[in-house]
Image 1 (cartoon, rainbow, N blue to C red):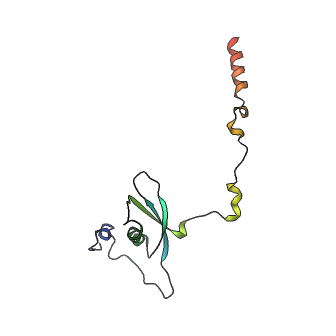
Image 2 (image 1 turned 90 degrees about the horizontal axis):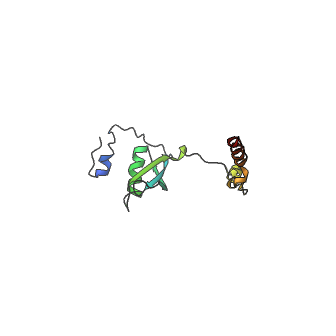
Image 3 (image 1 turned 45 degrees about the vertical axis):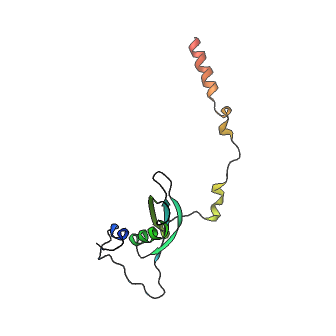
Length: 123
């Protein structure tokens, strides 16, 4: 394990033989999306990105950048490449149906069943 004067890094229990390959010239680390949770039970909120060689270091960087100020209960990091999005061409999937027929009881044929049941009970 990496021993550091910073307990936050030691707590991550990163292996010493963790393979971080040196970058070639003009090469970049991957980007990770960071999600922050203020307190347990709250939803995680996207707060930004970090560049890191692997997920463990992304978490350390995220704690340094987004977790050291204010209250933090939890952080998530997700590779940006693993985030799936919709295409702008698929905008019609978000259109709303202005007709609210499902809210009206008239759309359901329950009264017919109730009346039929009442008739069968009278016999």
